[in-house]
Every structure is written in structure tokens, then in C-alpha cells.
Image 1 (cartoon, rainbow, N blue to C red):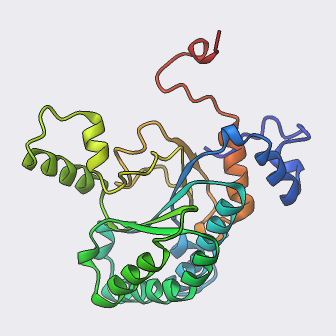
Image 2: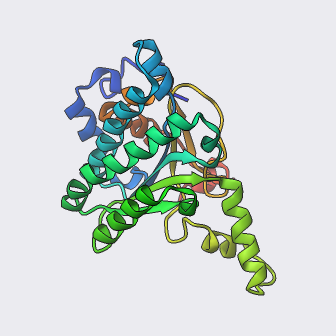
Image 3: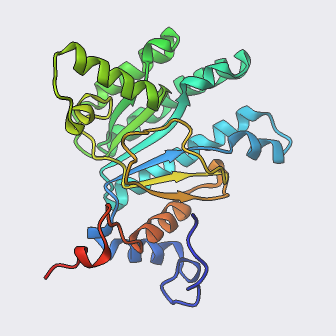
Amino acid sequence: MEASSANQHDPKHPAQLSDERLQRVVLEHPERMPRHVAFIMDGNGRWAKQRNLARLFGHKEGVKSVREMVEAGVDIGIDAMTFFTFSKENWKRPKKEVSALMQLLVSTIRKEVAELDNNNVTLRTIGCLDDLPEVPRRELMLAMDRLAKNDGLVLTLAISYSGRQDILDAVNHLVTSGVTPIREQDISGALTTAGLPDPDLLIRTSGERRISNFLLWQIAYSELFITRTFWPDFRRRQLLEAIYDYQHRERRFGCISEQLIEP
């Protein structure tokens, strides 16, 4: 859910703060900073439709939001960001739109890779890259190779991704490898996200209230932040508000509040 309006008279409530002050307030609690933020980027098409534009314009504007998220993540010290870029199910969309999205992916990678390198960002992908046409697949591989030496924020693009398929592939790999009994840590280690912390915060834009087959295993204890804002309008300010909200939640992981208080 979006940040509550109940305490909007609090001088430190996001509504009362400038962008710069809000960032300073968020940075006051580094121990509460989410290590890994995941995004379901929804609403590009509706954003464009409201402006009587073709859907592709919404996707192009949404690229700017991704750029701002990564820049903000680098600035405030987030370890990892994962973006649901293209799902397995998205291949069912009209061929013209899919082709345009693949072209946008290629142009974006070529345009952004140098800046990602300057910001010490590492690039990863999850999903079935073999589903992609040759050119976007090659550009992704080249970008990942170029950024592999970096050790800053880990940027993961979920492309042709299915959470169910990720779990299924992991279990089949473990069974084929003769692992028995299969433990939770075995599955976590066999998923495509192995080596990354599970998302602390999952943000979904456009007001939709579903997970859409994204990181199903990994988000078991993630905090959810659902906003009506369409993805092209979700920028640094909105991210900081989501993190502020996250920092004021109590994460119990199945325990009760009293168990979290150290003696």
C-alpha cells in the first residue's frame, strides 16, 4: 500500500519535505535501508493512452524512470535492483509491439551502458534469454561482459521471465543432480537469482494488486508497496517515499513484536 496519510502533519512526513530533505531523512537510518528493491513496472500503456499517444511512447518514458531508479539506488546505497522488464507471457502481445519493445531494449542498452559503467553498476539478467531475437540477446551479453568487473549496485533485468518456471527449473536441476532431500537453501541456490539477497521491498506501480508471476519464491517476506502512479511518472521522489514507508514498517518474519526486542 502507499504511504499512509495519517501522520501528514509530522514534520518529517514525506508530504512536508523537499526532495533533498526527504533523501536526507531516508539516509538517517542506513540500518533500515532495503538491500534489494524489486519493481513491477506497470502502467506504461495507460500513461500513453491518457495522452493520446502510442503505447511505445509510454515504454520510452518508462526507460527514464528506470534510469532514475538506478541513479537513486547508487546515491543512497542500495545493493541491488531488479526490474520486471518482459515476462514470458508478454510474448503473447501483438507482434508489432513486441518487436518495438525489443528494439527499445537494444537502443536503451547501447545508450546506457557507459553511464552504468561510470556508476560501477553490474548488469545481470534472469529469464530465458534464448527466447530473445539475436540482436537484443547479443547486446545484453556484451553489456554484461563490459560491466562484469564492477562491484557496485547489481542491476537485474527480468526478461522472458516466469517465476513458476524459475522454481520448476531449479527443482528439476536439483533432482537431476541427485540432491536429496531438497532443502529451502538448495532451491534458493539453484534459482536464477542465486547470490542476490531476497527483495526487501517490492514496488508495483499503476494500482494493480497482483504479483504477476514475478520472483514468487524470493518475495516470501518482501514488503509490498503498491502505488496508483503509472511507471513513467514514478521517479526518484516516489522511490524515496516508498523507502520512507518501508523504513517505518516492522518486519517480523513470522515472529511477534516482543521477540524482535533485544533483551
